[in-house]
View 1 (cartoon, one colour):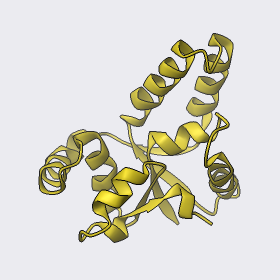
View 2 (cartoon, helix red, strand yellow):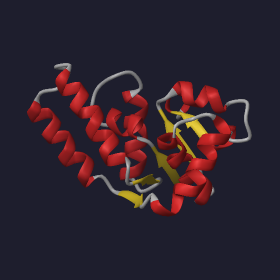
View 3 (cartoon, one colour):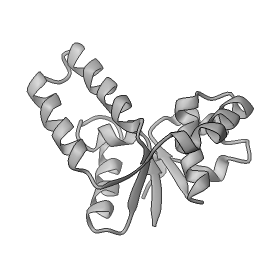
View 4 (cartoon, helix red, strand yellow):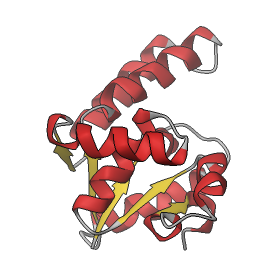
Length: 143
């Protein structure tokens, strides 16, 4: 099974916070090869920015950030270049009033005919009453 994952979920694999237990279950499924994780390559700068922010807020040490970066880079992700996704991502962003960044993940889910998983509950709620509601799931609902 393929699943598109955003940076909000990726970070929870390595940083203990709300919903990290659900992220650990997802990671276990990836390690068992039950799930293949997909992401646009912008997941790396987004994850890096989250780590930078957590280090600036003193939630992580520099050493912890470096360890997490190593783990992120060794995670078996199927990465898609955003160039081919750009037209669809912009269309989705405009049509649904979401960021182009979020729309890239949804575009990838549409292209692969799968679902995006996110820890961004607000994004899920925005799309809950649209025709994209089946293209996204909240990490809190992951079993």
